[in-house]
View 1: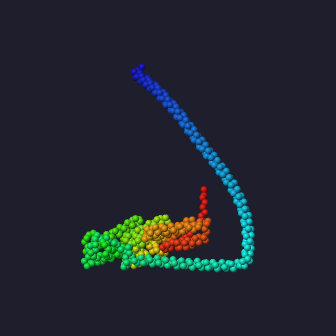
View 2: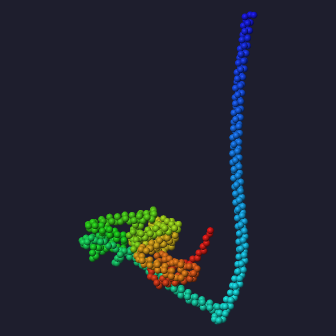
View 3: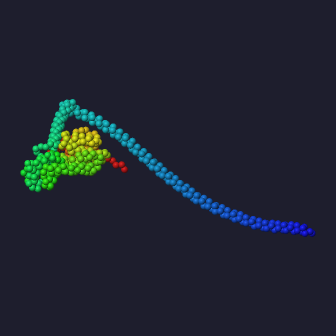
Length: 517
């Protein structure tokens, strides 16, 4: 065999052997991979089976829980339905009982109605019989008295006319006496206003001020050489300086309280200073006037602040402060105006009205008195002019104009101002009146009212200007009420001494009261 052939064969055999070895190795490797894949697949199946079992268990547990919750809800619904059914049954039983009660009541009412009809027929029959008896009695009386019904009626009417004529005459006489009393009261007020506005020869205790001197030598110094000091004082202050024989005292006379106060402070300052001559008098007077103006402004501001009143013109505040130096029957005008403002505010709050406006109207109702020494006219007219000048509310203007009854009242606040003005002036101690006499008068009024038969309680109102008598309605009828009022009037007139008039009001009130349970 040739070497080339041998080589080729050897190469072929080597390739075949290599291929065989390679195939063998590949087969061995394939078997190993297949085994691993099978194992992985088997493990995956086992894991899937395990997860499947776990999921089934979870589903079974959730299904069991849902079943329990559903069973619980169904049981609750059944209990609720059973409870509602029981309640409905009870309500139905209650309605049945109520229906039964109503039927019994209806039967009872029918029976009562029949009884009432029968009683009505009996009463009507008795009434007819009574009418017949009365008619027979009247006929018999006419035969016995020989006096017909028509003639008796004429006699009774004639007697009533005579009694009514006497009543009318007494009423007219009373009204005439009341008119005269009112006229006298108005005349007194006019005289007092005039006395306080103009200077007269006679000075009262409300128009003079007394200054105590350290010694009688000071009188000569106040008079000055040839009377120049006293003339200067009277000229700059506008007051009359009375220096008489009274030891260590001089008197300042003026119907203007503000001037009198300024003059008093000026003279007291001069006495303390010791330098008294015309130039010094004018200097001190100017300084006192400035201080007094500041004091007046402070008084006005304090008053407005205490009442809670805002947005007041400065000039109006000054006029309010001037009321401090004005008196009426001994009552300080500023204090009176503050009281009226407070009372108006309290009553307005109770009635649901404007409290601020009511206080403002009450404070300003007597504002005209602050300058009625300087301007002609009554303090009411002057107050209205002042309120209009400073653009006050129409309610305030009407309250000022009507608080003495001179003008018709157009608002509730105007009525409150009039009431508060009366209360402030009439309270015990406000004006020159004895507190003991006031209390005794009220007690006497109430005791007179309580002395009548059938009177339950007596109240003296408005400082004794009105008496309210509460009578027992079951003992006193309407006609008897008028008689009690007339008898009480006569008893008061005969037993008491009092200023003005007293209004007597007899009240007969019936009340029907029940309590719902």
